Length: 167
Image (cartoon, rainbow, N blue to C red):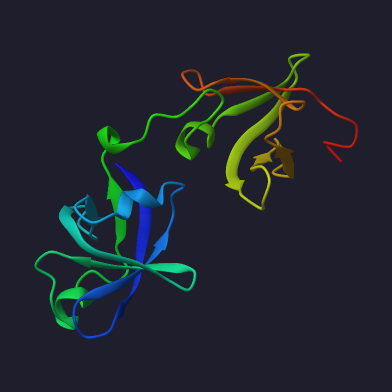
């Protein structure tokens, strides 16, 4: 299962929850869709969305059968996940974060640079945070002149070292 959001609080008294979206696909939260709240015992509770709206920088969701604040309180703090079968088909040169995080990064000359630790989304393009063998962070922009090849099966990425990239 893959994380799509996190229930950060309740909202009102009619069972709505405030959700931090952790997906590039907001349509995952449309009315009629099912997501899974994963509790501390790692049990996946299926939730069918019957209410959806934006609120400031978050989403407000309502689930079938969760009609009071007491119902919603049981979900507070839980991750909302989707099954692998619910993932969207991606276009060419598009990847899910879980396919990139943990991948080894190499220069085109074969030198190992490090491992992708996390991904930032500051604006026009993603930036991959790579930790080298000394645990130093290297920021790799996901742009065509830099990222030359991504092999998700083998978790291997080839990049072109540009001047100043490793400094």
